[in-house]
Image 1 (cartoon, rainbow, N blue to C red):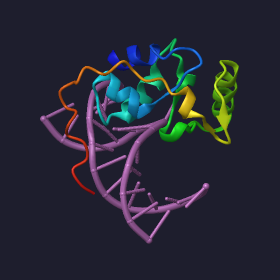
Image 2: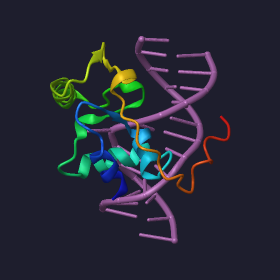
Image 3: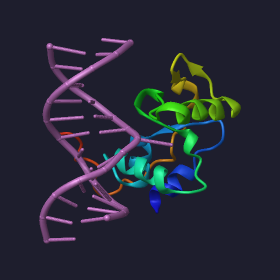
Length: 107
DNA sequence: ACTTTGACTTCGG
DNA sequence: TCCGAAGCCAAAG
């Protein structure tokens, strides 16, 4: 799966977001699908995936563990959030996959 | 083929 | 900064 592949590309000490991963994998807007993959997949660096703004989206113990694991990798936190400015991993340009331009028509 | 389901995102108040 | 509503989308059942 492309999403899994994208997740595995995140280097240690860096993090990414659901939305960014979805785009990198060619599924712009499918952030929720990334969550599904994380939940079901194995051997994934799940701790490196955060919500928009660098916020941990897990609940309870899992959230604590994620934070712990990230700090172990050298990821710095600023309050509840990760310092994205330094730690966000930028994917090497997602192949302008098909359905990109469709972004949000109105609201 | 149709409905449900998320570790989501963004906007407004 | 926090909360609710609406949007979004592929995978599972």
